[in-house]
Amino acid sequence: MAILRVHLKEFGTAKEGRVFGNECGGVVGSSSYWRAWEEERRYVLPSDRVESPFAGRPYGLRHACITRWRNAGVPIAEVARRVGNSPEVIHRRYHGCIDGHEEAANLKIAKLLEEDGGAA
Image (tube, rainbow, N blue to C red):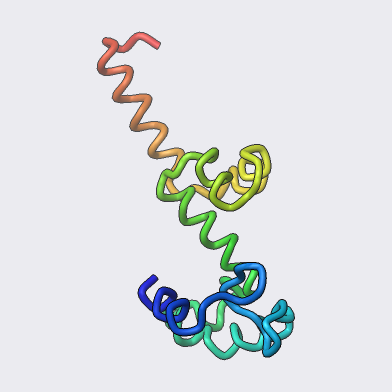
């Protein structure tokens, strides 16, 4: 965020409030994003992920972000609001992405059963 704030302070925004613009202030072409991402992967990803398919294209960063948020326990409705999708889309697309979800659910169920004296 600090780097982004410095960038915005120095350069402002492009047309229509976009963070980045092309030379004329217009939309940056997808091939430019692709080229920049290919060059920068080694600087922003953990070394074991640079050559992996993880975030192989810039749009993949969105999926990686959504998956991390879901794994962190952010509710589907909140993830959907932040990324501009419906909760149904997030649920359908990312329903199986949560690492350890079965173990976490089992612990919650066990705790509830203990509190209720073992009654289901």
